[in-house]
Image 1 (cartoon, rainbow, N blue to C red):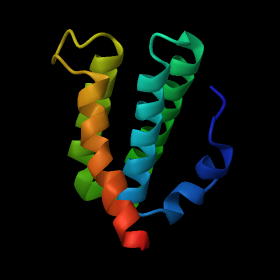
Image 2: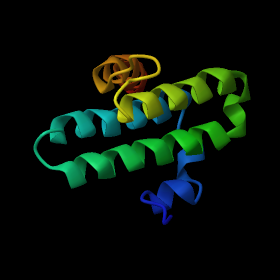
Image 3: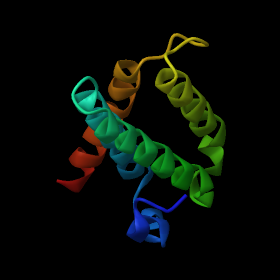
Image 4: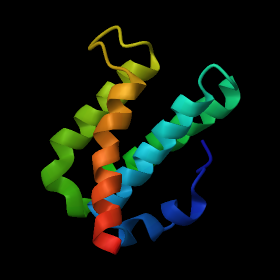
Length: 110
């Protein structure tokens, strides 16, 4: 599959902090929520980008101490995407989880 975030996949992602990376993943989940029920293709594209960014974060060696959390988040995102049958996960739950990272990243910038 072709990378949706070519610049980030080429190394730009590793220049971001953990909070920034997680906040950006959350942005894609938030977009998926926005498009749910309005445009299935745009919703799916947002989810594909969320998985791509999450995979880039998992591959970032700086966060190996967070690997268990990151792989669990990926599992929960998969569950939510498929309807929450395994864990009862929802995109709303993930949106709330990731919001805190985006908020913390924003505070650090100021």
